[in-house]
Image (cartoon, rainbow, N blue to C red; front, side):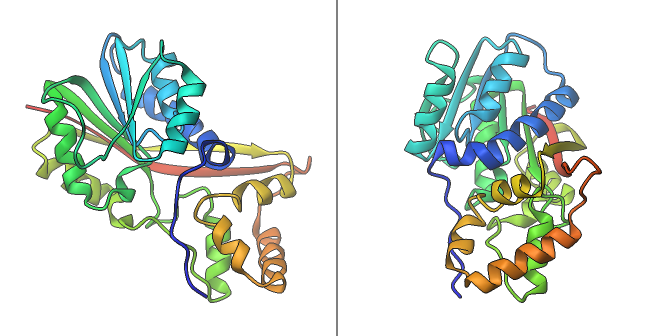
Length: 261
């Protein structure tokens, strides 16, 4: 069976699975980062605006600019926030459409391992922030099993199947992030592990939501019905279900921040 490519084109579909996770983990990330108010922010790979909204609501910014390659995601983000809150434009993380030193802070939320050349993307962060400005990111720790769909991915492996994963997963490790930030010339680098927990109403809520993820949904659509049934049974046997029937899932991300000299 061929492995579909991960695509992020539909903002509403993204919101159901990853947008809500991004909000949860993003709050923990901002609490750790604790940025001062009044910054000019750029949200690189802003997607449907889930983290952009947190910047607007929690960081008292002077301005927020979101950049993403997907028209569909940007349309959702514009509707979500409105032009008076943030400005969105299509763009490439490796060639940002802004002048040098345009921002006080640059951030990548769950993005860096999707950039074809992560080092170029981080160098662009350094270029568009002012001297003394900060560049920060958080990313699911896929190499060490920290992503929110890890139980399903592991059960697929047990069936001899491999789900599509981020093309630059090595960038999600603490070592990978530190190397990227060091090579881009940042100093005063700090790292942290951020965690979030999401509660699902029951197993069916967890299953339908998680298998709708952009890396799993195309694969599930190509699997034989018997294989899907087997996978669901295996996951049900592994998933932690509370006495109330709710399902509580924790995910973790590696975070980093540095300053431009």
